[in-house]
Every structure is written in structure tokens, then in C-alpha cells.
Amino acid sequence: MAKILTLILALASVWLDYTAYKRLKSHSINRKILYSFAGTVLASCLLILLTPLFMFIFIDAENSQWMMKFSMSILTVYLFFSVSRLFAYAFWLPSKRKFWMKAGISAGALLFMFLAYSAFVTRTDYKVNKVTLSFNNVPNEFSGCRIAFISDMHIGSMWNAESELEELSELIGEINPDLLVFGGDLVNIHNSELSPEILSLLGCIKGTEGTFAVLGNHDTGAYINGSTPESRALNISMIESKIKDAGWTLLRDSTVYIRRGSSCIALTGIDYSEKLLDYKHSLNAIEDFDVSHVYKNVPDSVFNITVSHLPQLWHSLCDNGYSDLTLSGHIHAMQMKIAGLSPAALMYDEWSGLYERPNGKLYINDGIGSVGFFARIGARPEVTVIELRCE
Image (cartoon, rainbow, N blue to C red; front, side, top):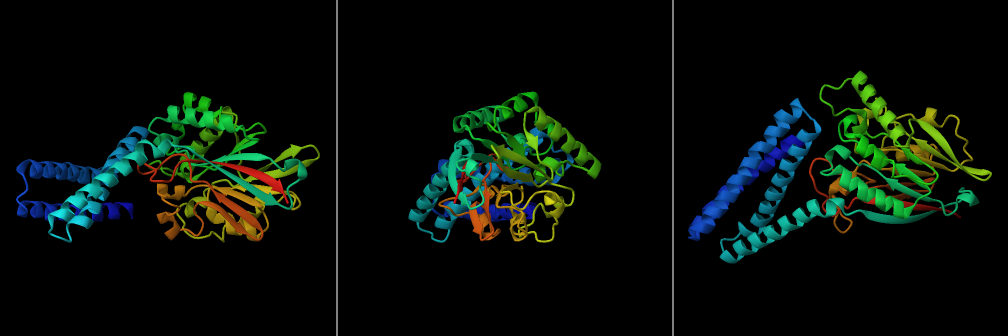
């Protein structure tokens, strides 16, 4: 679908560029301006040619870190130029008056600057969301327990991973949470993204009473070209080993109990198994995925927090009485959220922030990293600080 949309956008851009060029000639515009416009269009056309080329050929042949970063860079510039020009044409081309031409060019330039800001500033401008959640079954000893929840780092697609993780580490250190929970997609493609330097920084991102993580779809190795169940299992095994070296505990369909005095709460992690890979791009609630075995030995009386990379499992977790609070990521608000509005809202019932049902709550974190293009258009990378309260 992404490839088809890219080609449609490319063809639309070429047709509109030609229309705009003819309009400029009809206005007898100064030659320098005309040549500048033609040069800009030519550069954009090269990007139009390069983007599908990389999407159809090179990415399919090799998806190493440098190749992914290079292709993401091309796609980002291409999208910024294309969207800005199309926005300008929306003002300009319906009317032949020079006023609307100038208004369109100004509007397109402003949009391009905003998009550039989203790539160079917003993309790494961490936001701390503080949320207080009350439950009638939280033990008194855990009232006030603070959980820092982060998700979707996609380390391999960070432009400067060490610098960005160092900033995140300092931010988590200032928060000093009791628990640190990570919601999946630590890497973008391959376990090799977790270098010793990266693992050292991850080791500084922690909670005083424990640091816990689950796998996401990108962690499974499913996006490595020519992947097989065996190669995916090996990739996961390497990630699990490296996460352990960083001092994190990986929850794979397993539960740990956090104890304070004579009380405890349960923290369960849903593993991203081979079966769950079939749902990695599902838009609807997943009702037919059985997780009963995960909770087989978890007492119903214990307050349960479940970490599931896919928020689409929440309905099932609630309806079966497994989870009091579910923490998820995956969607990133599609890296576009302005004034609380996002294209994700048109595709998902639950896509960002807090959701409540009579038998449970869900919080979806907007993630840290980026996928596909190097920008977060209004959707700032998020660190969620959840404070538990006893009703």
C-alpha cells in the first residue's frame, strides 16, 4: 500500500508541477524566478525517481542500518517537498490571479519550515506525561508507586542513537521512577543495533525496583529480508541476551511480582510470538488470540499490570479479567498529532493516551523513535509517568 501511495503522489506531483510551470510562463515571470522554480522541480523529480527506486529495489535487496537510514532520509525530504508543494498548489492553481500564486508559495514555504522543525526539533523533544490512575484493588503499600513507561525506540532508525539515548537516560534519571517499563520495538530491524555503547546507555535507563520489557514486532526479526522462523528465533535470542546484559528483565508470556512489605502487584508481559506476527498490522481489536496460558498461575486477587506491544489485545485482556491496567505502544500516533488530532484516529479505536472500560484501563504511549521517515509532526516522543493510587 505504501508503495502504491508513493507512486500516486509522484504522478500527481509531476502533473501539478507541469501545470504550475505553464502558469508561471503565462504570467511572464522573471526568468531567474522561472529557472529557480524549474530547478526546484527538477530536484524534486529526482527524489521522486529515487524514492520508488529504493522502495522497490534496494530496500528489498538489503535492509542494513545504513541503507534504512539513507532511504528514510530520501523519503523524508521527498515527502516534505511534495506535501509542501501540493499545499502551495491548493492555494495557487485554482485561480490565475498572481495574489494566490504568492499566497500559495508563502503557505508552502511555511509548511516546509514546520515539517523541517518536526524533523530537527520535535523528533527528539521528549515530552513527560504525568498520569494518576486509581484502582480499588491496588494495595495500600503501592499507592503512590510511580511507573515510567516508554516504548518503540527503534534504535536503528535513530539518526544519532547514542546522543538521543543519553538525553533520554538523563530524563529518566531525573524522574527516578520506582519501575521502568518498556513496551516493545527496541530495535528497528536487527539485534546488531544493540552495540556495547547502546547497551551501556540502556543500562542507565532503569527503575529503582526493576526494569522490565516486552518484545515488539520489529524485535522479532520479521523485517529482515529472507527471514525464517529459525532466523527470527535467533534474532530474538540475541536481543534477549543483550537486554539481560543491560540489566533489563524481558517478559515473554511471563509474570513477575513486585513486592512491598506483605503486599505485591503482578506485572505480566505478552510475548510477540510467531502467532502474533499475523496481527502486526491489524487495525481492529484482536479477539481470537488466546493468552489464557499466560495467566494460568496468576491469582485473580492480585492487581495486574499487563504490557502488550499491541493495544489491540486490550479488549480481550479486559473481557477475560486478566489485566487491570494495560500498557501498550506500537502506533506512535503515526508520528503525526496536532491539537490532539491524528490520522491514526481514523484507523484505530484506541491509538494514543488513556482509555477506560468498566473492568480495566489502557494507556498507549506515543513512542520514542521514528519509523519510515525522520520526523514527528506534532507527536513528540513520550515518557509516561503513571502514579498508582488506591481508591
